[in-house]
Image (cartoon, rainbow, N blue to C red):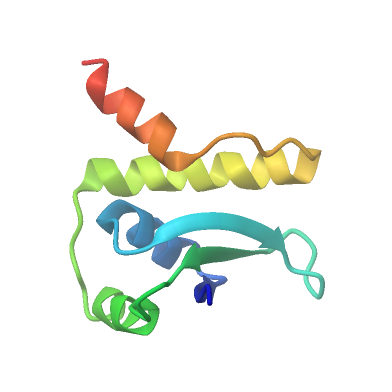
Length: 100
């Protein structure tokens, strides 16, 4: 059984990606609120709510990783609106770090 964790909060989604707590799966446009999205993560071990509590309590991640996650998710939102979601965070993020 695949468990997922879903949030509508972009900063929390940024944190989850930057901290590598959960693997980003996809985003979906919110049917009730156009131009808003739900961020869906693989939560195989049920850590989503704990990670959210840690984020709400001020958990820290590297600024570079947080900004990279935000850039990735904003690009995903733009591509979703235009119907061309093609990239994965891991590929983009890893290539950025290894090309230095």
